Amino acid sequence: MDVALIFAMATLLQRLDSTTSTVWSYLNNTFFPGNPRLQFTVLTSLVHVTAVYSAAAFFLSLKQFGCLERFRIQGDKEPDKNLVRKCQVHMIISCIISFPAVMHFVVWPLARRSASEIETVPSALSIVSHLILFIVCEDCLFYWLHRASHHPSVYAIVHKQHHEFKINYPLCYEYSTIWEGLFVNTGWSLSPC
Image (tube, rainbow, N blue to C red; front, side, top):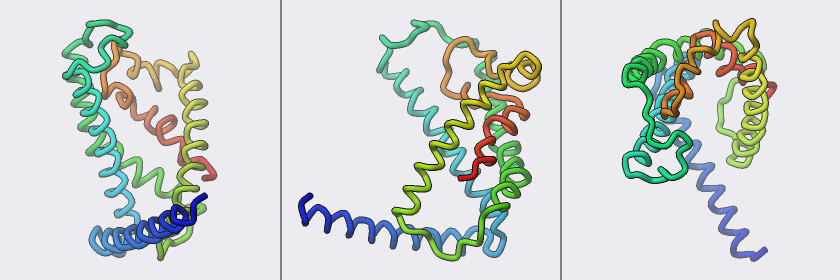
């Protein structure tokens, strides 16, 4: 590897560490200082809403501009407008009430069982390596929990609502019952990561 490239990467990691520390300090001192549980609830909810609606906007814009239409399995079929409206209302309620409540009352206590107070921000390398480990653990857990939600004894209660959509729609991946939200979508909180 070129020495200049190694130096550039080291400089980039130092700047990333400095920026991350500055952002961490700002968030910690601005959003509900002294109340880490509320900080966790609000910030994870904001990240969730941003991720969900950004992904939906991206896929809806691809559809609007006709990109990738030739790859659509269902051709030009569209989901039922009433079901789409029901899903949109469900998502708004979920993002405002359900998701923050699950984060505050379920995920926070589970996450705290093995976490210690974080006074300083970990290095960028540590964040990236933990993120990769988390993604592997979360993906594996989600797969098996999602698969278990198809079991006949729990399907109707836990997972059937998600399968009301027969045609893909960008928000249908989050269209689920509170039980699925608790057991499947937040199952990653059981991960040792």
